[in-house]
Image (cartoon, rainbow, N blue to C red; front, top):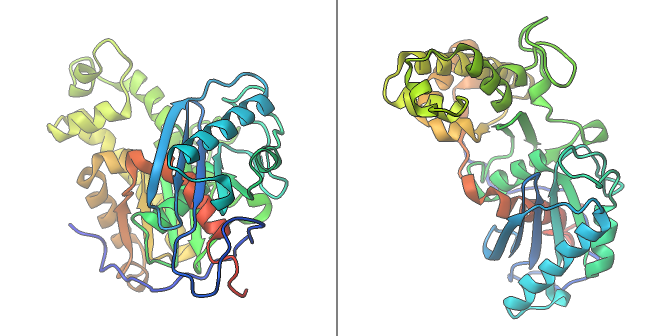
Length: 354
């Protein structure tokens, strides 16, 4: 089964931009691409990249995060790595138009700070934007990792050309982002897109956020792994693939491809909750496309086909007729493109009239 209806492509983007304060001089009508730097700070890895606003990557590097406990020291190290990346390509910082940084939340985007990331000791209220701007002399924009992934898939991946987009990722938790009317929607305190904490079952399973019945408690990777540890039958294909390790969602996907009954039942449960969330979001937002990452991207038709069918059967025809539900395209390239997505959204066409 293909996407629900056809893929309606809408030409043209109308973004709100942050004007760069330096970089290579530009003249109206100049066709050459911007030179941008991207940083993706994760709990285990940091990716840095040099590219342009079209997602063309000239160079990138990935290394373990290795937080020192001192955020300013860590940010200084990242700045030094960006200089090395640029110099290795025969370029200089004076040519760079902007830097985009993808960070784990929560963060104060307006103040340029990450607030209290759980996997980055010493980064409480770290002044990421100001520290990098001072070190590099280049304008810096920051955003949370879910918004950064949304921007990357919208600008460079599966959502190219659409004006109304919802991106969902089901990794450890459930994150999301929304492009509405050709602009990233952030909401109050940049807190829009917390799809994982939509109540999907009243008084349901407990969620680490303190609420009960959240979507994340049913389809988040960590919650699903906890469930699998309790319910996986010893003789199932899932148990066989896990071996001596705890069973995980990827083992479910692998076993389901072989027709394992338990794995197929677990995927049916996952798909049902995911489809329920998509139906709710469709009635509220009426998007053109849902882009689904991580687990769904790995499972492919095992998730996409039943989710499309469930959504089609539970929304009004005019909302579902042209609604596309697709897997994310970027996959393992997302870390090198997330920061570039933030930079592109902040600095591309900054001189255009509002």
